[in-house]
Length: 104
Image 1 (tube, one colour):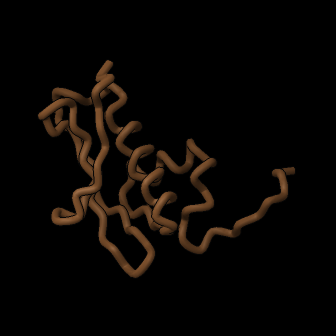
Image 2 (cartoon, helix red, strand yellow; image 1 turned 135 degrees about the vertical axis):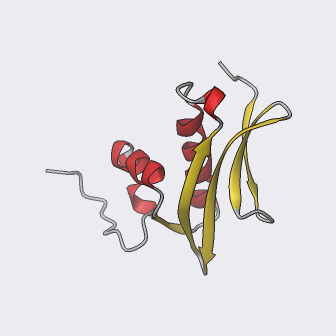
């Protein structure tokens, strides 16, 4: 579903946006502090909730944070929960201990 979903950074609005074609279906707002993105709010349009849009939006935003060499702080409960369930993004969290050792 939503094969045409695209996640883009809209720096003028300080948010990542999820578009299905020409329709804005969700966004994740952030503040920039140097090389750190602080995620403050994520929202998916009610008619698109429960369809995986939020997860794809989070993944697209976090992949962009990684590509830009930024770190992040998750003040947004949705992004924080996404990070808890996707440890592959833990290295992006500002102040996180970065280790190459496997977990015990």
